Length: 184
Length: 184
Length: 243
Image 1 (cartoon, chains in turn red, brown, orange):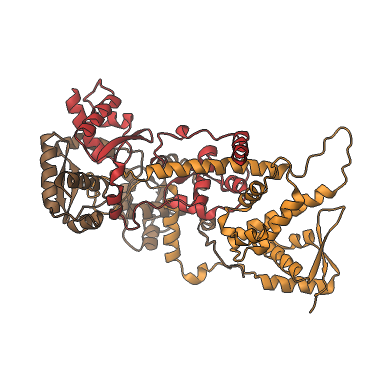
Image 2 (cartoon, rainbow over the protein chains, first blue to last red; image 1 turned 45 degrees about the vertical axis):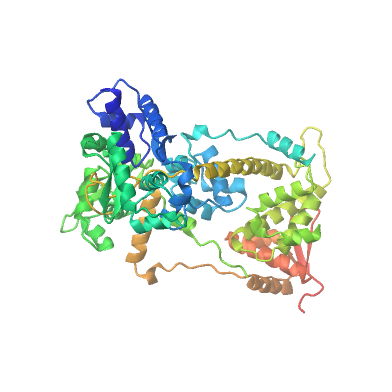
């Protein structure tokens, strides 16, 4: 199969897919029509096409695959499509909870609460409702507490390819040193 | 606003909209930036662009609005997106049936229907087809009705070791509990 | 300084640790050597001043107040160095909690920035009526365990008679606990806080009781003393008790 045909197929898949298009999924879709050109290269070609023809969208690498997203400049118009004028932002409490889960996962509610020093039911609920977190099994210990993890939606929400792409959790010494500098 | 700017805005809206883009919705999105060009004309121009540049998608008029869909010829590839997808896609009816079997297993079709209050034949069939449920044995009673349970695939999908690891209702209520009771 | 404190609202803080970090930063305190008496005083003052205590987080603030008082009491104990065993600073656990929390609080800023930069981009949502679906009912994308559990809860709530499903909600108010403590103090000259705690099973009751003690302390209905030997609180009648 040659590149132009592949470009069309990949474009169609990107338009139809409800989740990021991964290399594996792409090959499932191709079936017997084997291609020697890697998905990454087809994506690169499509990206150039979209840029040159002034499309209002681009292909984003996210959650281990590819998905079509709109260019940032159109946000003021797109907001009007959604009743609550666009995306709801997460509260500080929910962001704290997410930060803890993403670095320490899988974690129990107790783990979260002992770090935050405050009960975290309502943030957990918000995050589960928005599918940014998911329940994944139970702890082995005696309490057999439920375990929480981040989801694919989490990666999409923050535009990450994988949890490994998160900036490293800084050491406390670095943070404190910076605090001191601010004071001077 | 001139046609080229409008084309880009409409394209962005079509990419982001969860439901068909209607004329009314389009004007809500435009806000104060009034346009004298009707949506229909912008759509016509975009359609020509897509045809000329050999895009794999087109704009379809549906339910009183417009939506981007893939060209029919790519159907064979797109099917692959939905076969054994990494995500579980269920109808509300199937989800309800699955929820009842998960928590009340083993159950008969009768048990399910008396909780849901509607016939559940087709959701049971869907769930059996997807291998999320399985039939295991019969009830002892006089009717000897078939008993439904969740399958190993079900456990694997949700990362559970056993059915006992399902979140208990009490745990759910913890998370769902109202937390802004007034003290004084 | 005091007036500044007045304007602070409890809800500004994500919890007691957040408030402590604020106090440490504001007064340029050394996190590795926290002046526990000062910070306990400021913390308690803050908790008392916070006008609208919403129970959910107020409980966590009150528990922290109790922890701080416990540490303060331990700090007063004469240090009996055995030579071999090094005595742990009573502040260590709190310090570690604060340091750990600080790391995640810092990371929260990063998450906030990522959220902001992703905000203008919207993912393409494929047409919902797509012919790839088997039927026309609304398809729920990416069903999670949480959805299964919510659905079951919803179904079962609607199925069962409301009467058979009524949950006994434990209700306890501040004035009830004030009354309860007054009753106990009529009969006993002294009450041990630790002893009281053993009576209660729920954290909510503990919290409300502690708040009641603080309230009575403010009105001078009780006096609270900390024994030198134990870090327990001893509650006795105050100057306005029984008025």
